[in-house]
Structure formats: structure tokens, C-alpha cells
Length: 247
Ligand SMILES: Nc1ncnc2c1ncn2[C@@H]1O[C@H](COP(=O)(O)OP(=O)(O)OP(=O)(O)O)[C@@H](O)[C@H]1O
Ligand SMILES: [Mg+2]
Picture (cartoon, rainbow, N blue to C red):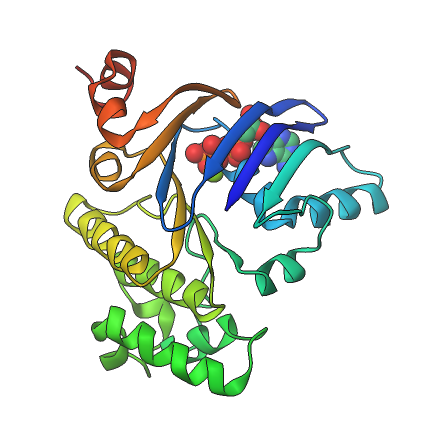
């Protein structure tokens, strides 16, 4: 479904993604495990196309220079030059880091915003599926989003991404800042999302909840892949164990 070849992303001050090769097959959950500054968000912004917007903005204001090299093939087509909105229409949807919900808007309004690029009938149907996945969101639908707990806000952020009807859902650090029990709630939701036929690429630094649900994964350090394999391979890998499990 997705194949990344020799991807390099440079910010003015250095290399953020270094010669990265990665692939995701239809209906897999693929994990990218990396600590702070490893390049996870840069990779996600590059896949969603947001990096191109940033690059143009920086060029306009004479700011830092951003360079993106390499190939990204998605469902048979090269997409590196496509605008973010076009990628969303094609089914690549990013749920960004730090759950950027609209705190002043209600839960329902937040979800509707996610469906902006889809038709009305489709949005209604998708909303039903989001309620089925997160029944508690339905009971909180008129609540101001900023008053939800951290875990609830994360589910809302994921729900909003689903409103855009992804084929490939990109999750950037969905477990960040959540207590372990809430992390497991998010993990369960991700399992159900895959069951509903959506392919998932997830970047995070919490190996313990993440590795058991991924089909395959990659460890990235300073923008380069250092280990790759099945979830089980990664769990048994001595390097991963010492770096992420402290054993
Ligand atoms: N806009 C930017 N300008 C310059 N350098 C940047 C920019 N964004 C990220 N970087 C640098 O690129 C590298 C990768 O950053 P990135 O945000 O992709 O990492 P990350 O894995 O998402 O980290 P975190 O877990 O903290 O979110 C880091 O060295 C970072 O300092
Ligand atoms: Mg990040």
C-alpha cells in the first residue's frame, strides 16, 4: 500500500530523516518506535504532505530551508509532490502529535470538522461508526472538548481523523501523556480501527503497549532505521529491550 524509498529530510540545522526505507501493506498495523527527536513527526509530516506546506511557508518568509528527497509510493502512485488535501482525499489521514482538538468547540463540532473534505451523507454514516467505536463520545457529544480528560481528548482526536475516511491512518504519538490504563484504551481502539479495514502506521516511544499490537515495526534513531522486524522480533531484540524496556 505504502512504500518509502531513500527518504531524506533536511532542516536547515541538520538531517531529520536519513535514507529511510519503509513499507506498509494493506490492513497491517506498522509501528515506528523512536525516542524524542528521532524523526517520527518529520516522517509523519512528510507522508501527510504538511512538510511541503511548511517548506513553502519558510521559503516565502526567508526562513529555514527544508529539503525533502526520495520516493513515496502509495497505492501504486508517486505522491511526494501532492498537496496534503489531495492526500487526504486519497485516504492518507494524519492524527497529529499532542491531540490538536479545538478546545472551545463541542465533541460533535470537533468530529464534524474532520469530515470537511467528505460529502454530507458520507459524514453522517462515518459519524455513526465513530460513535460505535467510542460510545462514550456519543454521551459526551455536547460537551466542550477542552473539558474532556486527556485520554478522552486523544480518542476524540482519533475519532476526528476517522471522519476524513482514511484508508491509511497515520498516528503520531497517540500514547503521549497518558496513564498506562488510558494507553491501553487507545491501543484497543487502534485494534478495532484495523478490524474495520483501515491500515495503520503508528509512531510512538512507548514500546510496551505498542509492540504487542503491531504486525511489523521499525526502530528509528537520529532519522535512520536501526532495527526492523515483526512485533515479536522487536520485543525479543536485545537492543530494543535495553533501550525501551530497561532490561
Ligand atoms: N521545524 C524544524 N526546524 C528545524 N529542525 C527541526 C524542526 N522540526 C524538527 N527538527 C529536528 O529534526 C529532528 C527530528 O525531529 P522530530 O520532531 O521529527 O522528532 P520526533 O521523533 O517526532 O520527536 P518527539 O518524540 O520529541 O516528538 C530533531 O533533531 C529536531 O530537533
Ligand atoms: Mg514528534
